[in-house]
Image (cartoon, rainbow, N blue to C red; front, side, top):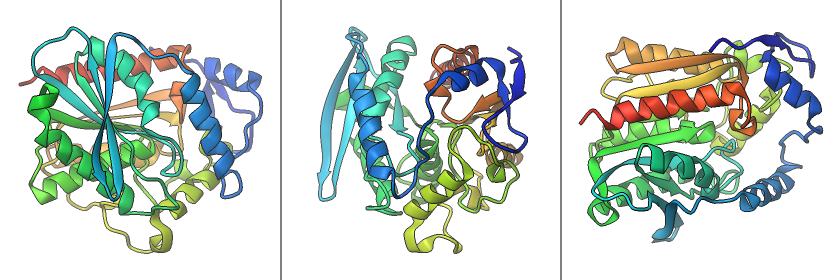
Length: 321
């Protein structure tokens, strides 16, 4: 699908938006930008939004406590009436490392689990700035290890477990894949990275644009400062920001998908290119005129195209074994 694009009107810069998305943004009320002063309000609003969304009765959801100190909980989503060991998508939610919860993945897995079919496991990691790196990543690793250890009782095929994530969740998924590879304890089957937040340095052209309609460069800096804490501005390790990795060999097959109106576009394209250069089978999709947070435009053609690309890629991955 080729999207018609038009110049954005919410600020200076070279941001070009899909016409349908631009029209939707023009109709939407102005939103407060995320900052230390608006964080509490943003968290409450996000939680209230996802609490109101209807859930499918075709998917069973069960919460499991992985550990009490720190408290790590995962939610297991399984399509009803589907027997046998299923592949598993282990998911980290988005939210700039500072907002959100695993409830954000309910809608994703309501759609995905019956159609693939697969089991979805969503981890409720701790948020920054209260818990900076490496705390959130430690939570994600603990939940992933628990998923492998309990695969049989959960009806999961342990040979077909992969990580998925959107935005900050994509950043955590990429870091988790690096960590799993290096520790050698857990073998991942794939990594699905949707507009992942992977580079704290903010040195690319796209990350420095003015006029980004969703997740501005100022919000991006706030998210990274919150997540890295005292480490911000220093030479952090690649488990904190996957784009800093100098060794991407040995990672699982990967999908990277991002829009051209997303501040993460350049870092995502570069990461996918480097994965391919070291022999990691990597698909890259860059959608014209699509900003960050495409899920907010649920009725748009661009959102449907995005979802089709993600679902078809995932179906191919879990069918490889």
